[in-house]
Image 1: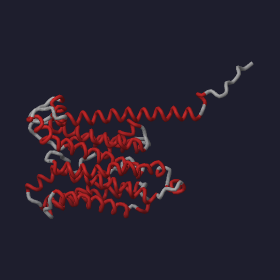
Image 2: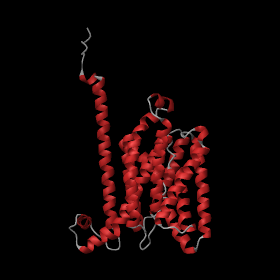
Image 3: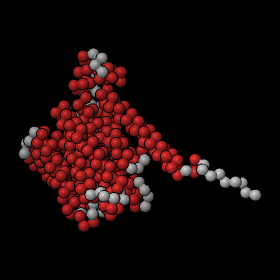
Image 4: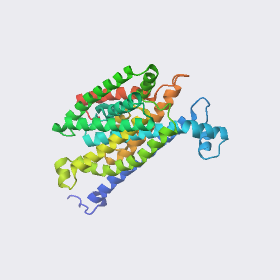
Amino acid sequence: MSAPTRHGDPADDPTAVLRRIRGRARRRRTTAGLVVAGAALAAFVTSLSVGAQGLGPGDVLAALTGLGTPRTELVVLRLRMPRALTALLVGAALGLAGALFQRVLRNTLASPDVIGVGAGAAVGAVTASVVLGLSAAGTSAGAVAGAVAVALLISVLARRDGLGGTRFVLVGVGIGSAAMAVVSYLMITASLTTAQQTLVWLTGSVTETGWSTAVPLALACTVLVPAGLLLARALPRLELGDDTATALGLPVGRARTALLAVAVLLVAAAVAAAGPVSFVALVSGPLAARLAGPGRASLPHAAGVGAALVLFADVVARTLIAEVALPAGVVTGAIGAPYLLWLLARSRTGGTP
């Protein structure tokens, strides 16, 4: 005789199972968020500690809380804080922008530095500074104009296959190459001093940043980062496909355009502040998804990963070679190039990045 079957077991209740799955996902996101925030904070404190006058973490924390010596507070708050804050905000902006591009376009390769949006911002900024001789505010405006113009051009040329097609990425790569050719021509026609300064900026550097750079970037991120996270509530429906999203009441065209517009402006703000820091936007989203799990909830983690990456890269660039201030983009390029090759290899073999 078979054993009696138990009915009403809470373990078999679909609602209880769903609740446990959501609880595990929530704990994973929380743990990942703490890890990412801790890494970014550690990199930030290290960035404030490294320099001609080495400081310990205790000295840095004392200066940040107003308990340090006047000399320590001068070094930390006035000399090193703008650079560290700029690196943090540039990384957060690029990380979030890259994740938004990849999620909206449903393509892991569709980051702004690969599809040419960052190159467009570079063209606008270099044109404003080299050709027109504008100030920092004019350079920032040029970066925004260049990024928006390239994004619109790519959208027009790739509209046949829609924003999710491979054609969008390929058109973006071509437009980005053309944009960098324009930058190269402008550098050739510029003076030697200007060309040298522009070359360092094009590599991606926070070396020469000050409060005049950090404050506008902070204001832009204060508006754009919450806007991006708020608009990202439409992503789960967008990822179901246009027809299903429309049936669920989502204005697909407006939602997609708004998300991409915020991402483009984030890229423009970051490029105007530090130049096109390579590969940060490409790797931040996938790394955040691996840590926190897929879905819209990993977007804040992508911003944190980007911030930690740029801060870490700047610290390594400052300490790797004595008395040589390397741009942070050199380090991020060394990290991102192998990742891009691995990503392409995985895509070719049918793997999931």
